[in-house]
Length: 107
Image (tube, rainbow, N blue to C red; front, side, top):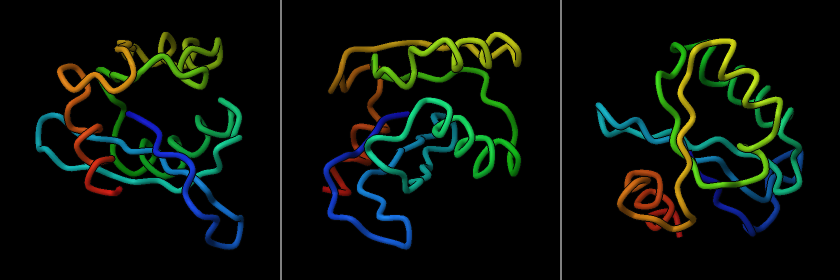
């Protein structure tokens, strides 16, 4: 999971960023429009409504150390559902290769 920010505003709500979710096992990805200044709770609601409610819970989520991922809310949700949260450094292609590659393709 990674964020692609500083996009030109678009859509009804003026989205200027997106969340890239890359599925490691089937090598697919999902891009969710969002705003750069969305709070962690907005991100959680977006992921719940657009992904988890239609598919299933994740076993492991890898992300860089963005404040939206390190928030207490996200950690509590991960502990509640048993999801493992792993952090990497920003732009680390070895641990977050699928999300980083998808962001490069979007650029």
